[in-house]
Image (cartoon, rainbow, N blue to C red; front, top):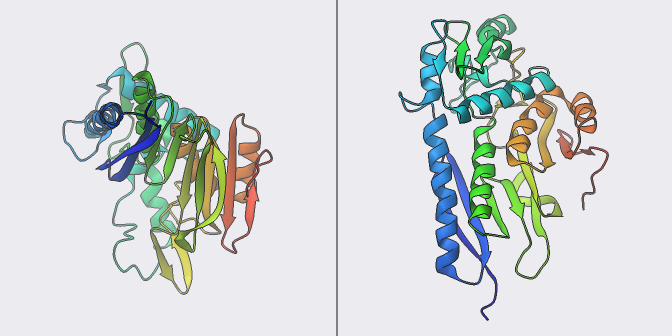
Amino acid sequence: MADLQVFKTSCKLMGNRFELSAVAEDEKWANEKIEAGIEEIRRIEKLLTTFSDDSETNLVNQNAGIMPVQVSRETFDLIERSLRISKVTQGAFDITYGSVDKKLWNFDQSMTSLPDKATAKQMVRLINYRNVVLDDDNCTVFLREKGMRIGFGGIGKGYAAERAKQVMKQAGVTSGVVNASGDLNAWGVQPNGKKWTIGIANPDSTHEIFSYMDITDLAVATSGNYEKFIMVDGKKYSHTINPLTGLPVTGIKSVTIITTNAEIADAMATPVMIMGIRTGLDMINQMKHIEAIIIDDNNRLYTSKNINVK
């Protein structure tokens, strides 16, 4: 009998590097199952992308303030779940963030000053999840105001990772990992029978590990200010924008969420960053089957109440 091994394939999809792994004896069998997972991510990318004119997301955006647009049940359900997360996070998570003009924040170029508060506030006035109207009977989505835009940047990658895992499990993969640029979804165990060990990156040096933990049947997502940021007057401003003010978040270097579902993990990491340490942890502590690890600007570590970090 052949030994169990981990077989891996990586690809670039949804603007992220995905790596899918399957534990198996036979390489050909493992690669077929991994390919099924990749196909599923491709399918979701087509569904949710804002880079293609005929995607459902863009049709909804093009008809903002004009009329409701019928979408697939899958897109409708994802939007409905997104709005629920917006309610829970008091608007810190909001798929209508796409309404913010790129001119306000451009983290790729040399921004040397912050926009003034009034301009920022004016720019974010269209961000309001309450203005997304869903009609369950007709499966339609309507954005109340002209210029509103939805986007799935905060939840899409997690949804795709969750779906890829389901597809691989249904195909018979009993142990595996879907890694979406560091957001991980792991199930089963390694070939040696041990849980999967995951590292939480050091926000000051992403190639180093800040802490690690062993997981199975869990998803882990991290939102950090160490990948995209600007320096203004010696202070670091992350690319995470508070949808209520239009200004960047400060005080937290990274938030890691650990829960049973990759979509939820992905969606909850940014809002905790926006809400801040106390409010964010308060919210997480009131929820079941979800934990958080926060590293602040001074490298202090905060965790929700049921967590054990090494």
